Length: 357
Image 1 (cartoon, helix red, strand yellow):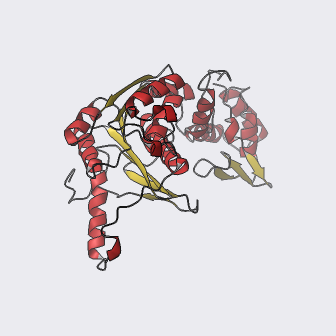
Image 2: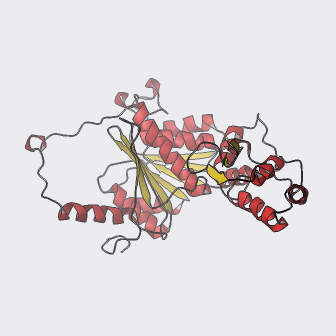
Image 3: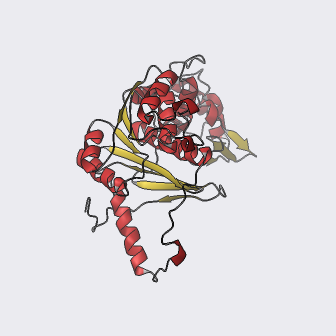
């Protein structure tokens, strides 16, 4: 092995005592205190030209007070932190997935896993997307472009004019056609290496979702009707052990949740906790003139696209572990301010949960 620092993680020295490695992205970058300069000398030597033994011998010679085992431990720590490049196979710029491979190599913190290994996991994955509106269409497109191996698209609806401000797979010429049919043909045009299938199907209960979940590695719920569909999906994925993601928006707030059954609280656990929290608080009075008003569908290509992108990102995390997002959690981003990014999740399953308790 000829260890080399990943280019995006190349270190920077601040003054004579501090080093930052990993770039500027929070969650990847680290600060190292280096008062005598030996760590910087080590990092300078990790250029891919020398073997580990050669690097160690050089450092021990230059810093006689630094034992050989300390230098080897430092290299091992850098490998374990994901700062050392493990990609022995060069990434050709003309490869279809080259830009994604570079990004994967940047984000992965798992030693001994090359970006090619991670891309292969995506090729082997089976993902089902339920709901091909603004969120689902974007998620499906991004998963297809990224090289998910099998993609099954489900929706019962047809394309309408009001869809076209946010649903990126459809055009004016598709109005009146089944969304599932249009989506399949468009996605195949984007990436012929992906096996894309679809069905026009109305989800009327958990049995349908159980069948869909049993046939995939990750199920995406991008539909919000019927109102119980999220709980149905939760139970179906608990029954089949299928990881799943849901995504959507509430005006300018975009949301995504990702769950891996059997590893912590389920989606319904959070619902129970929220209901109990509200019940324990002051009595809530709703604005009476709004009782008979139907909420408007407030969305555009940005809100739907952001939510769909977050969904695709969560799917790739569940499939590959890169990046290693916290599962059994929900994330929200406020597009009205771009400063309120939050994660909500229970530490353990709720004892009163009707689904997993």
